[in-house]
Amino acid sequence: NARAELEALNNILSFTLDINDEINWEALKDTTSFTLEKPIAPKIEEPQTKEIPPKPHRTDEKYNIAPPNMPSERPMISDKIFKQKIGFIRSIFMKKAKKEEIIKEHFEAAKNKWDEEYKQLIEKHKEAQETSFTKDLLAWEEKKKTIEKYNAEQIKTTEEKIRTANNNHAELMKTYTEEKEQFYSQQNETNSAIDAQKHSYMACEPEAIIDYCDMVLANSIYPDFISRSWD
Image (cartoon, rainbow, N blue to C red; front, side, top):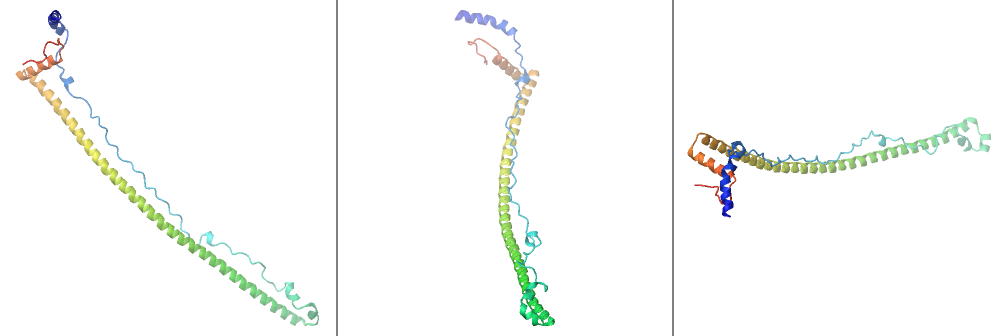
């Protein structure tokens, strides 16, 4: 009501005297920091390559196993079997030299047969080991090609990921840098304007004094029926 408004007007001066309406120029400045987080450099995992197994060599123990034993011992001329081939009756009437000749013939035949069978056993065993080595070597070469192809694809894919990630990071960094520079440029421009306004006010320039009064009025507390702006 009118009485309350009149009382408020009467108290303006006393209320204002208790408050320091001087403008704090530094408080007007923008001192905030740029809050946009800096983009983090990408971290790409190393390519998941496979290791090539050791190459087989003919000298490996696997391909140099001792040949199996013959099912029987190598014949000896002293073996009883060669005497038994003459027969007991014949041996009684046969001269010693003749008996020895016959025994030697049977022994040589048996020995030669045993030697030939042993030779074939050794050759067959050696051939089996050669075949095993050749088979393993071919399988290794094929596996090596497969792994090398796989590793090349993994490396290529990883390189593409790194290239894409680095390009994206570069774009993000460009945007970040531009926005940061713009932020502090605007901040410096605003704060420089405040310094210039303060300098003009301290130099008692009319316009600066008017602007200062406007700021004081805007920051002061008055009854609602009093305008804070003036011409």
